[in-house]
Image (cartoon, rainbow, N blue to C red; front, top):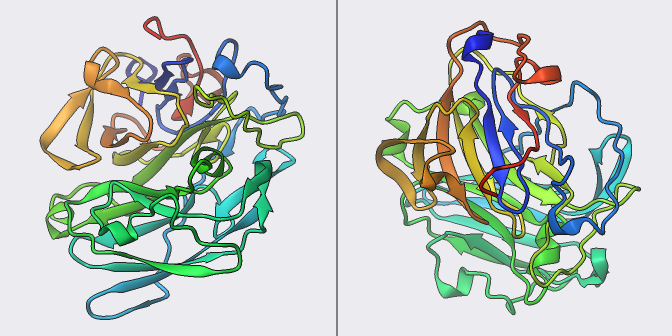
Length: 350
Protein backbone atom coordinates (compact mmCIF):
# COMPACT_ATOMS: atom_id res chain seq x y z
CA UNK A 1 0.00 0.00 0.00
CA UNK A 2 1.49 3.34 -1.05
CA UNK A 3 1.99 6.20 1.39
CA UNK A 4 -0.90 8.07 -0.26
CA UNK A 5 -3.21 5.12 0.41
CA UNK A 6 -1.93 4.28 3.87
CA UNK A 7 -4.77 3.79 6.32
CA UNK A 8 -4.69 3.74 10.09
CA UNK A 9 -7.27 1.93 12.22
CA UNK A 10 -7.78 3.99 15.37
CA UNK A 11 -9.23 2.78 18.65
CA UNK A 12 -10.21 5.93 20.51
CA UNK A 13 -10.90 5.53 24.23
CA UNK A 14 -13.73 7.57 25.70
CA UNK A 15 -11.92 7.97 29.02
CA UNK A 16 -8.73 8.56 27.06
CA UNK A 17 -8.02 8.10 23.38
CA UNK A 18 -6.17 5.01 22.25
CA UNK A 19 -5.95 4.57 18.45
CA UNK A 20 -5.09 1.32 16.73
CA UNK A 21 -3.30 2.05 13.48
CA UNK A 22 -3.34 -0.30 10.53
CA UNK A 23 -1.42 -0.15 7.30
CA UNK A 24 0.19 -3.40 6.31
CA UNK A 25 0.93 -4.63 9.82
CA UNK A 26 -0.69 -4.40 13.27
CA UNK A 27 1.56 -2.74 15.82
CA UNK A 28 2.15 -0.74 19.01
CA UNK A 29 -0.20 -0.78 21.96
CA UNK A 30 0.68 1.93 24.43
CA UNK A 31 -0.85 4.79 26.39
CA UNK A 32 0.97 8.11 26.23
CA UNK A 33 0.52 11.58 27.63
CA UNK A 34 -2.89 12.01 29.24
CA UNK A 35 -4.09 8.55 28.33
CA UNK A 36 -3.89 7.08 31.80
CA UNK A 37 -7.43 8.29 32.53
CA UNK A 38 -8.41 8.06 36.18
CA UNK A 39 -5.56 5.68 36.94
CA UNK A 40 -2.92 8.40 37.17
CA UNK A 41 -2.22 7.43 40.78
CA UNK A 42 -0.76 4.12 39.54
CA UNK A 43 2.93 4.39 38.55
CA UNK A 44 3.36 4.05 34.79
CA UNK A 45 6.21 1.61 34.03
CA UNK A 46 9.10 2.43 31.76
CA UNK A 47 9.02 -0.78 29.75
CA UNK A 48 11.88 0.07 27.40
CA UNK A 49 9.78 -0.91 24.39
CA UNK A 50 11.64 -2.20 21.35
CA UNK A 51 11.05 0.34 18.55
CA UNK A 52 9.89 -2.56 16.37
CA UNK A 53 7.34 -3.63 18.95
CA UNK A 54 6.30 -7.20 19.66
CA UNK A 55 4.54 -9.73 17.41
CA UNK A 56 0.81 -9.78 18.10
CA UNK A 57 -0.04 -12.82 20.18
CA UNK A 58 -2.82 -14.90 18.70
CA UNK A 59 -4.55 -17.03 21.36
CA UNK A 60 -4.27 -20.68 20.31
CA UNK A 61 -7.40 -22.60 19.37
CA UNK A 62 -8.17 -25.21 22.01
CA UNK A 63 -8.39 -28.75 20.64
CA UNK A 64 -11.15 -31.01 21.97
CA UNK A 65 -9.92 -33.57 24.46
CA UNK A 66 -12.41 -35.98 22.87
CA UNK A 67 -15.43 -35.93 20.59
CA UNK A 68 -18.40 -38.04 19.58
CA UNK A 69 -20.53 -37.85 16.47
CA UNK A 70 -22.73 -35.32 18.28
CA UNK A 71 -20.60 -33.42 20.82
CA UNK A 72 -17.15 -31.98 21.55
CA UNK A 73 -15.42 -32.16 24.94
CA UNK A 74 -12.81 -29.73 26.25
CA UNK A 75 -10.68 -29.43 29.38
CA UNK A 76 -9.67 -26.03 30.75
CA UNK A 77 -7.57 -25.33 33.83
CA UNK A 78 -7.53 -22.16 35.91
CA UNK A 79 -4.36 -21.24 37.77
CA UNK A 80 -1.68 -18.70 38.55
CA UNK A 81 1.02 -18.24 35.96
CA UNK A 82 3.94 -15.97 35.11
CA UNK A 83 4.25 -14.54 31.61
CA UNK A 84 6.04 -11.67 29.90
CA UNK A 85 3.85 -8.73 28.91
CA UNK A 86 6.25 -5.85 29.53
CA UNK A 87 9.71 -6.49 28.04
CA UNK A 88 12.02 -8.38 30.41
CA UNK A 89 9.60 -8.10 33.33
CA UNK A 90 7.59 -11.11 34.49
CA UNK A 91 3.93 -10.52 35.21
CA UNK A 92 1.89 -12.79 37.47
CA UNK A 93 -1.54 -13.54 36.04
CA UNK A 94 -4.60 -15.66 36.55
CA UNK A 95 -4.91 -17.65 33.37
CA UNK A 96 -6.82 -20.31 31.54
CA UNK A 97 -4.25 -22.98 30.67
CA UNK A 98 -1.54 -20.57 31.85
CA UNK A 99 -2.27 -17.74 29.42
CA UNK A 100 -4.30 -14.57 28.97
CA UNK A 101 -6.39 -14.24 26.95
CA UNK A 102 -7.19 -17.92 27.37
CA UNK A 103 -7.28 -20.35 24.46
CA UNK A 104 -10.04 -19.82 21.92
CA UNK A 105 -12.86 -22.36 21.75
CA UNK A 106 -14.37 -22.76 18.29
CA UNK A 107 -17.83 -24.29 18.26
CA UNK A 108 -20.50 -25.05 15.67
CA UNK A 109 -24.10 -23.93 15.92
CA UNK A 110 -26.29 -26.82 17.04
CA UNK A 111 -23.35 -28.97 18.13
CA UNK A 112 -23.05 -29.12 21.94
CA UNK A 113 -19.80 -28.44 23.76
CA UNK A 114 -18.91 -29.72 27.23
CA UNK A 115 -16.12 -27.94 29.12
CA UNK A 116 -14.51 -29.55 32.17
CA UNK A 117 -13.03 -26.82 34.35
CA UNK A 118 -10.19 -27.66 36.74
CA UNK A 119 -9.59 -25.04 39.45
CA UNK A 120 -5.90 -25.11 40.36
CA UNK A 121 -5.87 -21.79 42.20
CA UNK A 122 -4.86 -21.50 45.87
CA UNK A 123 -7.43 -20.48 48.47
CA UNK A 124 -6.31 -16.85 48.15
CA UNK A 125 -4.87 -15.60 44.90
CA UNK A 126 -3.72 -12.37 43.19
CA UNK A 127 -5.00 -9.15 44.71
CA UNK A 128 -5.91 -11.04 47.88
CA UNK A 129 -8.99 -12.33 46.08
CA UNK A 130 -10.57 -15.73 46.78
CA UNK A 131 -9.52 -18.72 44.70
CA UNK A 132 -13.09 -19.75 43.85
CA UNK A 133 -14.14 -19.25 40.24
CA UNK A 134 -17.36 -19.32 38.23
CA UNK A 135 -17.28 -19.45 34.43
CA UNK A 136 -19.84 -17.51 32.42
CA UNK A 137 -20.23 -17.78 28.62
CA UNK A 138 -21.01 -14.16 27.80
CA UNK A 139 -23.66 -14.03 25.08
CA UNK A 140 -24.31 -17.77 25.18
CA UNK A 141 -27.85 -19.15 25.03
CA UNK A 142 -27.52 -21.68 27.81
CA UNK A 143 -29.72 -23.24 30.52
CA UNK A 144 -29.66 -21.45 33.88
CA UNK A 145 -27.73 -24.35 35.41
CA UNK A 146 -24.86 -23.70 32.96
CA UNK A 147 -24.92 -19.90 33.00
CA UNK A 148 -22.26 -19.37 35.66
CA UNK A 149 -24.40 -17.79 38.35
CA UNK A 150 -22.04 -15.77 40.60
CA UNK A 151 -22.52 -18.04 43.62
CA UNK A 152 -22.22 -21.36 41.72
CA UNK A 153 -18.58 -21.54 42.67
CA UNK A 154 -15.88 -24.03 41.76
CA UNK A 155 -13.66 -24.31 44.83
CA UNK A 156 -9.86 -24.58 44.61
CA UNK A 157 -8.78 -28.15 44.00
CA UNK A 158 -12.13 -29.16 42.51
CA UNK A 159 -13.71 -29.28 39.08
CA UNK A 160 -17.08 -28.98 37.39
CA UNK A 161 -18.53 -29.45 33.93
CA UNK A 162 -20.33 -26.81 31.86
CA UNK A 163 -22.57 -27.83 28.96
CA UNK A 164 -23.26 -25.39 26.12
CA UNK A 165 -25.88 -26.37 23.50
CA UNK A 166 -24.81 -23.68 20.98
CA UNK A 167 -28.36 -23.35 19.67
CA UNK A 168 -27.82 -19.85 18.33
CA UNK A 169 -26.54 -17.93 15.35
CA UNK A 170 -22.80 -17.73 14.60
CA UNK A 171 -21.32 -15.12 16.91
CA UNK A 172 -18.22 -13.85 18.67
CA UNK A 173 -18.67 -14.69 22.36
CA UNK A 174 -16.28 -14.81 25.28
CA UNK A 175 -15.97 -16.78 28.49
CA UNK A 176 -14.79 -15.24 31.76
CA UNK A 177 -14.86 -15.57 35.51
CA UNK A 178 -18.12 -14.43 37.12
CA UNK A 179 -17.46 -14.79 40.85
CA UNK A 180 -19.72 -12.74 43.14
CA UNK A 181 -17.98 -9.46 44.10
CA UNK A 182 -14.73 -10.48 42.37
CA UNK A 183 -15.52 -10.66 38.64
CA UNK A 184 -13.68 -7.35 38.09
CA UNK A 185 -10.30 -8.28 39.59
CA UNK A 186 -10.37 -11.88 38.34
CA UNK A 187 -10.94 -10.78 34.75
CA UNK A 188 -8.42 -7.93 35.22
CA UNK A 189 -5.79 -10.47 36.29
CA UNK A 190 -6.47 -12.60 33.21
CA UNK A 191 -9.52 -14.89 33.38
CA UNK A 192 -11.12 -14.38 29.97
CA UNK A 193 -11.01 -15.98 26.52
CA UNK A 194 -12.86 -16.10 23.20
CA UNK A 195 -15.61 -18.55 22.23
CA UNK A 196 -16.47 -18.44 18.52
CA UNK A 197 -19.56 -20.06 17.02
CA UNK A 198 -19.84 -20.72 13.28
CA UNK A 199 -22.05 -22.77 10.96
CA UNK A 200 -22.25 -24.02 7.37
CA UNK A 201 -23.93 -20.85 6.11
CA UNK A 202 -21.23 -18.55 7.50
CA UNK A 203 -18.51 -20.78 6.08
CA UNK A 204 -20.19 -20.68 2.64
CA UNK A 205 -19.85 -16.88 2.45
CA UNK A 206 -16.16 -16.99 1.56
CA UNK A 207 -15.09 -14.77 4.47
CA UNK A 208 -11.38 -14.67 5.37
CA UNK A 209 -10.53 -17.51 7.75
CA UNK A 210 -7.58 -19.41 9.17
CA UNK A 211 -4.50 -17.19 9.26
CA UNK A 212 -6.58 -14.33 7.82
CA UNK A 213 -9.13 -14.25 10.64
CA UNK A 214 -7.55 -12.30 13.50
CA UNK A 215 -8.93 -11.86 17.03
CA UNK A 216 -8.35 -8.47 18.68
CA UNK A 217 -8.98 -8.58 22.42
CA UNK A 218 -8.54 -4.96 23.53
CA UNK A 219 -7.79 -4.36 27.22
CA UNK A 220 -6.36 -1.56 29.31
CA UNK A 221 -4.42 -2.62 32.39
CA UNK A 222 -2.44 -1.07 35.24
CA UNK A 223 1.15 -2.16 35.87
CA UNK A 224 3.54 -1.06 38.58
CA UNK A 225 7.24 -0.45 38.00
CA UNK A 226 8.05 -4.14 38.53
CA UNK A 227 5.62 -5.34 35.89
CA UNK A 228 2.91 -6.48 38.31
CA UNK A 229 -0.75 -6.00 37.47
CA UNK A 230 -2.41 -3.52 39.83
CA UNK A 231 -6.14 -3.49 40.56
CA UNK A 232 -7.15 -0.44 42.60
CA UNK A 233 -10.77 -1.40 43.29
CA UNK A 234 -12.11 1.90 41.92
CA UNK A 235 -15.89 1.72 42.47
CA UNK A 236 -16.42 3.82 39.34
CA UNK A 237 -14.59 1.25 37.25
CA UNK A 238 -10.95 0.42 36.61
CA UNK A 239 -9.07 2.39 33.96
CA UNK A 240 -5.61 1.17 32.99
CA UNK A 241 -2.37 2.99 32.22
CA UNK A 242 -1.37 0.56 29.45
CA UNK A 243 -3.24 -0.66 26.38
CA UNK A 244 -2.89 -4.30 25.34
CA UNK A 245 -4.14 -6.20 22.31
CA UNK A 246 -4.32 -9.97 22.89
CA UNK A 247 -2.18 -9.39 25.97
CA UNK A 248 0.55 -7.81 23.81
CA UNK A 249 2.11 -4.42 24.37
CA UNK A 250 3.34 -2.66 21.22
CA UNK A 251 1.92 -5.36 18.91
CA UNK A 252 2.47 -5.61 15.19
CA UNK A 253 1.05 -8.03 12.64
CA UNK A 254 2.59 -8.54 9.22
CA UNK A 255 -0.16 -9.04 6.69
CA UNK A 256 -0.43 -10.23 3.11
CA UNK A 257 -1.87 -8.41 0.11
CA UNK A 258 -5.47 -9.51 0.66
CA UNK A 259 -8.60 -9.10 2.79
CA UNK A 260 -8.55 -9.82 6.52
CA UNK A 261 -11.33 -10.50 8.96
CA UNK A 262 -10.97 -9.18 12.50
CA UNK A 263 -12.99 -10.32 15.52
CA UNK A 264 -12.89 -7.57 18.12
CA UNK A 265 -13.67 -7.82 21.82
CA UNK A 266 -13.57 -4.93 24.25
CA UNK A 267 -12.27 -6.80 27.30
CA UNK A 268 -11.62 -3.66 29.35
CA UNK A 269 -13.22 -3.05 32.74
CA UNK A 270 -14.93 0.27 32.02
CA UNK A 271 -13.13 2.04 29.16
CA UNK A 272 -15.09 2.51 25.94
CA UNK A 273 -13.61 2.90 22.47
CA UNK A 274 -14.38 4.32 19.05
CA UNK A 275 -13.03 2.56 16.00
CA UNK A 276 -11.98 4.25 12.75
CA UNK A 277 -9.56 4.38 9.87
CA UNK A 278 -7.49 7.52 10.19
CA UNK A 279 -8.29 8.89 6.73
CA UNK A 280 -12.04 8.48 7.21
CA UNK A 281 -12.41 5.56 4.81
CA UNK A 282 -15.04 3.05 5.91
CA UNK A 283 -14.28 -0.50 6.88
CA UNK A 284 -16.80 -3.28 6.46
CA UNK A 285 -18.73 -4.43 9.53
CA UNK A 286 -19.83 -8.05 9.19
CA UNK A 287 -21.63 -8.70 12.44
CA UNK A 288 -22.32 -7.80 16.04
CA UNK A 289 -22.45 -9.84 19.20
CA UNK A 290 -25.79 -11.38 18.15
CA UNK A 291 -24.58 -12.68 14.79
CA UNK A 292 -23.94 -11.60 11.22
CA UNK A 293 -25.65 -8.54 9.78
CA UNK A 294 -28.03 -9.07 6.82
CA UNK A 295 -25.34 -7.46 4.66
CA UNK A 296 -21.95 -5.86 5.35
CA UNK A 297 -22.11 -2.31 6.65
CA UNK A 298 -19.62 0.55 6.61
CA UNK A 299 -18.21 2.09 9.77
CA UNK A 300 -15.85 4.94 10.58
CA UNK A 301 -15.00 7.41 13.31
CA UNK A 302 -17.75 9.84 12.30
CA UNK A 303 -20.43 7.18 12.43
CA UNK A 304 -22.31 6.91 15.74
CA UNK A 305 -22.25 3.12 15.33
CA UNK A 306 -18.47 3.19 15.78
CA UNK A 307 -18.81 3.71 19.52
CA UNK A 308 -17.88 0.46 21.26
CA UNK A 309 -18.82 0.03 24.89
CA UNK A 310 -17.45 -2.47 27.37
CA UNK A 311 -17.68 -6.17 26.53
CA UNK A 312 -18.69 -5.28 22.97
CA UNK A 313 -18.03 -7.92 20.34
CA UNK A 314 -17.74 -6.99 16.67
CA UNK A 315 -16.57 -8.45 13.39
CA UNK A 316 -15.19 -6.43 10.49
CA UNK A 317 -12.75 -6.72 7.64
CA UNK A 318 -10.11 -4.48 6.14
CA UNK A 319 -8.74 -4.88 2.62
CA UNK A 320 -4.94 -4.50 2.69
CA UNK A 321 -4.66 -4.81 -1.08
CA UNK A 322 -3.18 -1.98 -3.10
CA UNK A 323 0.50 -2.62 -2.43
CA UNK A 324 3.00 -5.38 -1.92
CA UNK A 325 2.88 -7.61 1.13
CA UNK A 326 5.22 -6.49 3.89
CA UNK A 327 6.35 -3.26 5.50
CA UNK A 328 6.78 0.04 3.68
CA UNK A 329 7.74 3.39 5.16
CA UNK A 330 4.86 5.76 5.79
CA UNK A 331 5.04 9.18 7.44
CA UNK A 332 1.57 8.57 8.84
CA UNK A 333 2.72 5.63 10.97
CA UNK A 334 6.27 6.70 11.84
CA UNK A 335 8.54 4.07 13.32
CA UNK A 336 5.91 1.41 12.65
CA UNK A 337 5.80 2.39 8.99
CA UNK A 338 3.92 -0.14 6.96
CA UNK A 339 2.51 -1.85 10.04
CA UNK A 340 -0.98 -2.01 11.49
CA UNK A 341 -0.22 -0.19 14.75
CA UNK A 342 -1.72 0.97 18.04
CA UNK A 343 -1.18 4.55 19.16
CA UNK A 344 -2.66 6.82 21.80
CA UNK A 345 -3.94 10.29 20.99
CA UNK A 346 -6.72 12.66 21.97
CA UNK A 347 -10.19 12.24 20.53
CA UNK A 348 -11.83 15.61 20.09
CA UNK A 349 -15.11 14.10 21.22
CA UNK A 350 -13.65 12.12 24.13
